Length: 104
Image: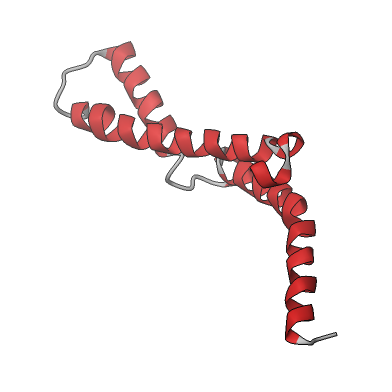
């Protein structure tokens, strides 16, 4: 990120947020929701809340249709932004590489 300037930090920060959400969902599923599922007696609203929260974390990993995908579109947007930011740097390297290889 330092190479591209502070004005271009937004997609890198967003990517970090996405990764943190994925890691948090994995941790919550493994240490809380799946361990309790079927082992801890829950009634009505508590069980409903448990399932809703568990399904929310699971949806990060399991594709449930385009309309319910919260991570994919965000990742695609970040990729596009990073590609736009790095395009000039990659073009500079290509020109440099061609010059040392004697290509035109």
